[in-house]
Length: 286
View 1 (tube, helix red, strand yellow):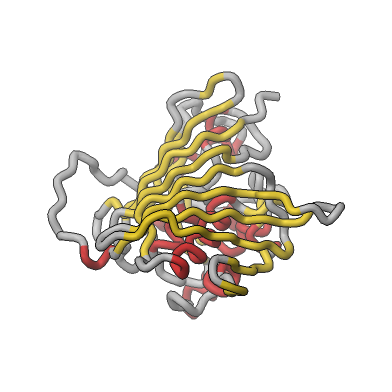
View 2 (spheres, one colour):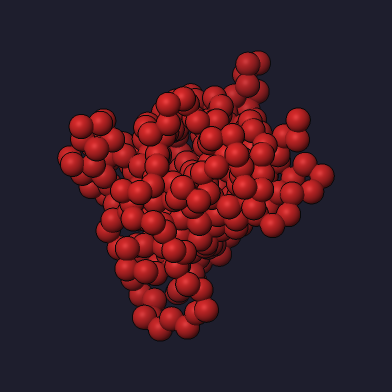
């Protein structure tokens, strides 16, 4: 049994998993939180942007009267590295159904100067209080059975961009969007796959913020390689996900002048659209 399969069998729980431990912040004083960003969530030696979003979201969940992120927008200012960091939050507005706050993650550079890594503006509420009414034209993407999909463990060579974070994720990619891994990208700018955490922990609003930025970038399907750093990312959490692996579909329609947009949809096992996102990212053209 592989390490990922063994972890899935053990099944960590929400609140007691590696993701929870690694993304938890410690309140130093009101509005100020400490965290040691772990090396286990890096890609190309930088901490993954979705993981950073979850860190900032946890701090805001503590600072605001509402616990659940509804809409989270982040601007990534400088690359975050493993090591000590400080999250500073500010309450912008509080209301009965929604509260808004902002958060920034800071680290020190080699000279001891404080550098802002990411700035977040977010609205929070209570997902469990939302009405059940849903009127949508969105339809879940069609996926092959999970046993017909492929993950990093199935590749004879490391996938482009594979790094420490890969060991912490459960990913099985739709073969129709995996041509880039075999040197034959489709050029359509599509990536689809099943997603979860390797230790079997079910998804919650915080891990959904990781999910929207954890699959291989669509730039790979356009024939590009290398790091695709996020410039700005907005995620919408629509409801609390049902247990089980998520289905994630990411597309891009426009790579121009070295930048591309990525639109992500995340569907749960109950067939509900539980999260959406759009980000602007920088792509290396050579």
